[in-house]
Image (cartoon, rainbow, N blue to C red; front, side):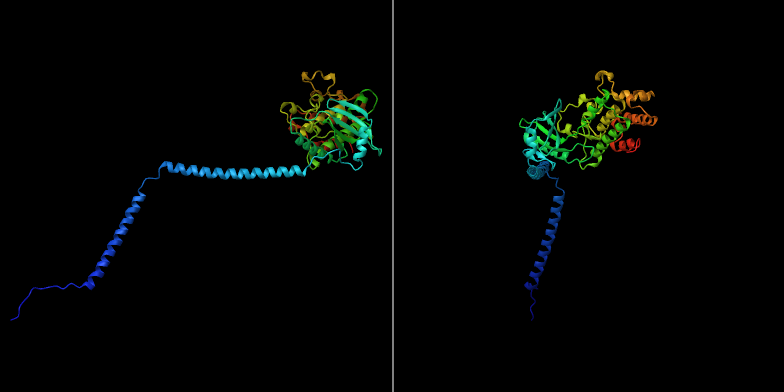
Length: 393
C-alpha cells in the first residue's frame, strides 16, 4: 500500500544568488540616484556665501591689482629715468665759447673779447659792444648781466644752451643770426651777432625827430614789411615756431641799406628778468593773464607801424602817464573813428597824394593790429599780404 507523505519544495541556489545580486544592485543604484538628487537639491537650496567671504575676495583682488599697478608704475618710472639720463648724456654741457659761424674761431674770439672793445650802449639787462676780430670781421657783443635763478645750475645751463642753439639755427634775411655765445666767469652771458652800422630803428627815429635823418614813406614802409616778414618766418616758416616776446624798435636793427633785422628773438623767454613791461610795446593780455601768443607779437608790430606813421614814441609825454589809460593805439583808434587820421601822420613824410592814401590804409592796418582782443588781430602771414599790396616790393 502506497504511503502518502508531506509535500516538500527543494530550493535552487544557482538561480537565487544571481537574482539577489541583481536586486541589491538595483536598490543600490536607485538609492545612489536618490541621494544625488537630494544632495543637489540641498546644495541648490543653501543660502549664498556669507558677506565676509565676498569681502575677503575683494580684498585679495585689490591687493593683486595694487601690486600689479605698483609694478607697472615702477617699470614706467625706471624707463623715464633711463630716457632722461640718455637725453642728458646726449646733450652734454659745452665749455668755453660756443661758435656757430665758420668765420669765427675760439682763439680769435677770446682775443677780441680780452682786448678793449667799444661800448655802444647799455640797458637795465646788459651792455652792447662792438669789437673787431683778427680777420677783420666786425661783431656786436651783447653782455647779459641778469640770468634767471631758482633752477639747478646744470639744468639751467643746459636749458640756456639748448635755447641758444635753436636761436642760432634761425636763418632769414630779416633776422639777426646768433654767431656765438660765451659764458662769463661771473655767471653772465655774452651773445655775438653781426654788427650793423646804422644801429636800431629806435636810433634812426631819434635822428628823424632831431632832423638829423630823413626817412621817406617808401623807406618806412619797406622797414615795416621787413619786420613783419621776419615775424612771418618765426611764426610759420621755421622748423620750430618761435615767438619774439620783446619786439620793439630797439630790437629792430637796420643795415646799411635800412633793411631791418629782428634782434633778441626769443631772448625774453630765456631771460624772464628782461624789462619788457615799461617798453610800451607789450600787448594788454600780457598784463591781464600773462599769456603771450603770436598775436602778442602782432600787437607789438602794430605799435612799431604806428611809430613809423606818426613819428611818436609810445612813451611820449604827449600821451600822459601810463596810469591815465591813454596809449598810442587808443589814440590812433579814436582819431580814425573821428575821421581825423590824416592829422596824426608824420608831417615830415607827407608828400604825394598816392603816398598819403597808402599811409591812411597802413593806419587802418595798425589800428587792427592794436585791437585789445587778440583774435581780432591779423596774423603775420596776413600782414605780409596786406602791406605788400600797398606798394610794390
